[in-house]
Image 1 (spheres, rainbow, N blue to C red):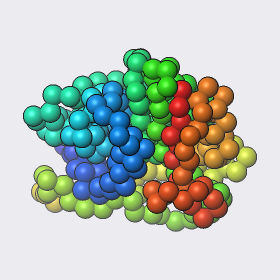
Image 2: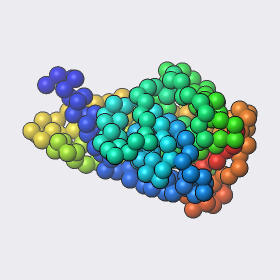
Image 3: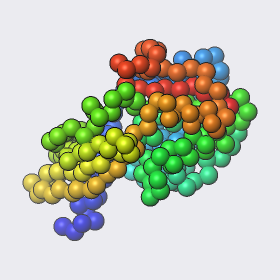
Image 4: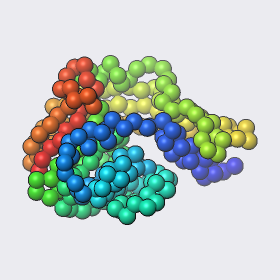
Length: 260
């Protein structure tokens, strides 16, 4: 079997396991809480994936536009949009795409700042996303930013050994594991580097694995808040978790509701 055929199985497995594993709803509940009594808002979600956040908001009556570059994730999303006429889907790279303008809300969720894939400087690209969110909003519009935040990232990243992130069987009968290995954290540059390894066993019993290097810039709470303010936002709400607690050394998220 050629490399392209292996990649077909790997891509399908990754999407299926994401659907099986990432099922939380706390962020959707938080967004609804922040929206309050606002109805039929024009909302733009960046990196919408298979619609975990986008579809519930559309069902709540908001006019949704979702952008993502993963065609298999978007195929899953299309399956969920049957009967919903208030969803527009755009396939594009969020780094280079035009996000449009005039939205009531722009959603940057799902640890999007940590998960940016770019050939450019990661820190600069993170700032760029906040700038693009500002430009895409109408006056008095809001950005919802939701990202991991660690008071001591060196205690979370760069741990020795291998760590299984996802493990399971997809709808084709392919069993696999997604593993992070050889991770290092540079405290000066705030960069995490390591190796992603995918180990798959097909239904036929055939096995293969694939490795790729990754780099992530881990922004501090102070950096994120400075970027938000510098572009012109006013932070109206900030939370350290979905319970609504303040950001502190014991919380692990930075959730912002910022007004243009």
